[in-house]
Image 1 (cartoon, rainbow, N blue to C red):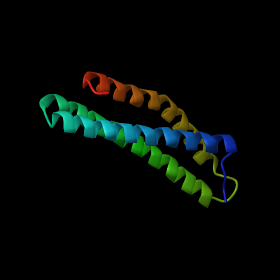
Image 2: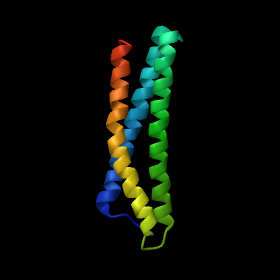
Image 3: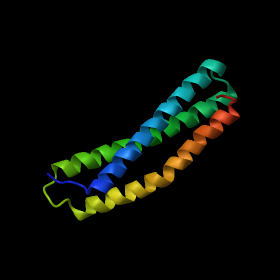
Length: 114
């Protein structure tokens, strides 16, 4: 069975946890916004953005899950192209998470929700 180094594996688990939190927060806020305002011209924009945020976080979470599965099924050593792709995905996700979190905060603020 192939394995990532422990630091990379932990980074993936930490990012997946953050992504799950983003999904949960976006979906909770989406429901709150819908229950408070329904589907108005203004709220539909926010509802769509929250759906997009949840989808982006879900997609990134799924990519890590696929990597973990492929690596577990690989025979040592793990192919270098997979390691490179994992590292690029980690870096990209680390840069994207703050933007997703900011977007949620902006929607919460603009939608006057707490």
